[in-house]
Image 1 (tube, helix red, strand yellow):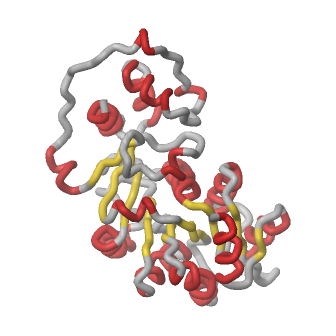
Image 2: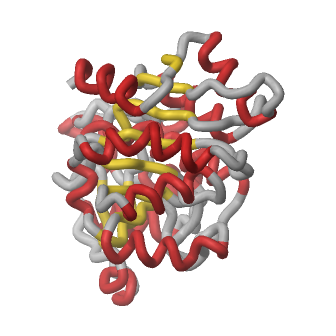
Image 3: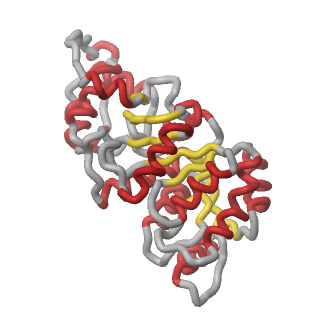
Length: 284
């Protein structure tokens, strides 16, 4: 059953509708998913019973190099993170390069604009350093700007970081972060819900954002514009009942508008990482 799920996912070419269509034809997988009480989209809702389950014995074969180059984690596996399993529309299959044990750590996502201000790196250091020292795993999206800063600084501090991609491993985006992606895959964890041959597309980064939010007990927003993917991730985290921390800035800085809006809507205003640490420890 696990192999069939992976096979359906791999051959879907990143098309979620095609993937779900395959699942809907496999009653054994449907029943197993139903037993997990997942929050699935309406198009994936299923009704089945023990009596209706049909055993399938067909063997499904994946390319050999796929298993050699990466690890595949399904929602049925023990390695699958509990925090992600509980979100709306959890990814049923994940592809991983690196240390999958990081998925069992308590994570905090650190996100922000792709065009940070000159002071953003120093702000990030002040926010993230106490979290790294307290053994939280830092999650971000490998994008330019704040995401890159978060991964680099965490590794410089000998901490733990997970980079979640909006594409398959064969198409690292942005290309300028290919070397960083290799470093993360070697000593940290590179993660995606897309098969390796899937190219980056705008909507896939939006889909990716729910994984960043879902892996984390809290999300820290360093800088964000009024309309941005950063705010989409923050909204997804809020919808899952996760804590949001926003760093205030100058009213003359466009990158602070998104953070100020989040604070107006109830996000925690934070001045340093110890503000974040105090609330996160209370949550555990």
